[in-house]
Image 1 (spheres, rainbow, N blue to C red):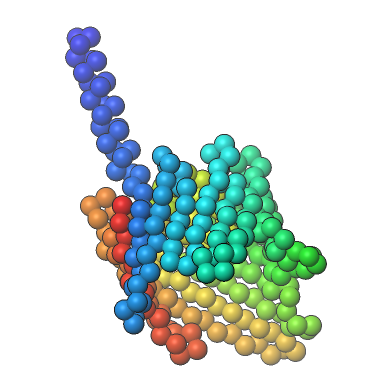
Image 2: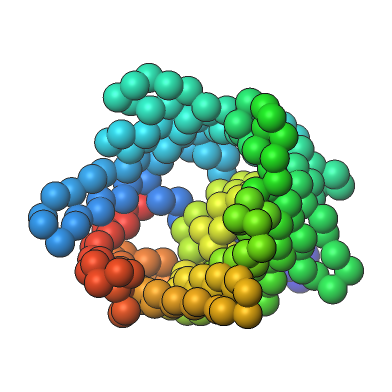
Length: 251
């Protein structure tokens, strides 16, 4: 009986290990092809489940961790060799500040109703740019609302991003700590965005001007519900300009 129990325990651990592996596939390469046929390749490198770098044709990102959280991202423009550093500060494992050194900062307040308030300021000199709210549902960002503080005098301007999702797996969500990076918008969500709506509104002297742009993503998935291909298109092109991008995922 004891031997039988031990065998059952070992088999159970094996099944759990296989399930865990299925749940954590890591994106290693992304190939994006535009409507004109030009292609860009982005490579992802890891140490365990920590992201070390993201290397694109024009931009390279290096990641630094502290206690399982991403504390710094150093971005290098390959053409100009200009480097920018984003520093992340946490309180009780929740992001409270993201600062691009000497350029801008974003502060975050985690509200009791599950929303997150934020405010972005330019630095040197300090100037308010915009403030707003992030709304979540099922570990997905479904809405980002901004009020533009740098609008012209007498004008109230807002900018809203809304997202709808599939029920499949976003490969970036497998990366340790990546879901904490609130400045990355819907890329940190558990699932993949299939519809995005960008709405802008400007009000001045009782006159309101609004516009909305719609984008859709169509996916193909593997047997583990990770995306293999995404086709992104503008349903209602911004300013009449069409948009098409095909993305291929490799793990």
